[in-house]
Image (tube, rainbow, N blue to C red):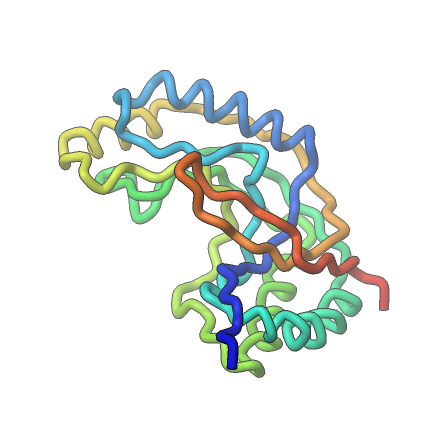
Length: 198
């Protein structure tokens, strides 16, 4: 019996092209302030707002995922959020992930996140046990960077000002496949769920 193909998957909200362009400018400007080679910068055209990381998923489960997410997307209220400001997880003293902030102006993003979590938990997927903090990842500090370099990155982030990049009103939820390549992660939409069509 052949083994099922495993797919690295996640559920996310895609972003508009103008926002991707703004994120690319912000990343370029911040990159000039950080020590060379200290950060692995993501491809800005692939940036998305992740709601649930499923990880390694048997390809046969995609139909089940589609079945439980379709009604969640149909029942979703319209999304609207603003994007701006930069920071780092866990903090600027020990930065690991460099992010751009997302503010849920319509108050509908957190309920959608909860509904996606509940739907996928019904299939046995384990949600993260930390609070949902909507953000867009710009880069990750290299693990082999010493504490001095990490501190310099944190200081650069602290000095960097990023005004609002505008407001987004996404109309889709997407199940993505992530393929790790030497040039960085590449994302393919496996299923697209229109929001609020119920």
